[in-house]
View 1 (cartoon, rainbow, N blue to C red):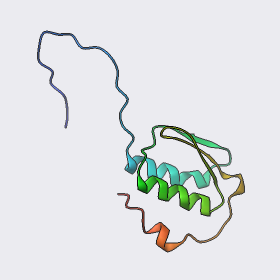
View 2: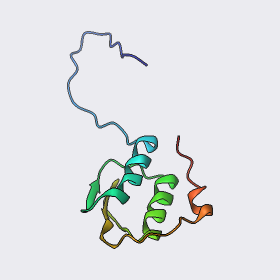
View 3: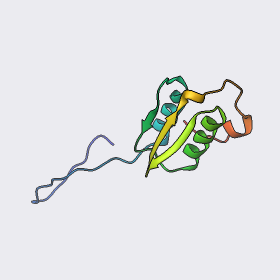
Length: 95
């Protein structure tokens, strides 16, 4: 969709917050392993693929904390280097 066309005599005002998108969030979550400091992410969708990715990050030693609705904190200071569990990794269906 390129644009919205609004017809009528009433002026519009206000703001909206777009919903989080898993295909945008998953690569950002993966990038947490490259961080050297705590990372906080907001507007993260509350869906199974995100929960699965958080589980993978925890398996790697990253501390994952839910700090609010659709908000997470990731502390990579305890990152361990080992292989991901294939069954968990294959459960994520990102594009």
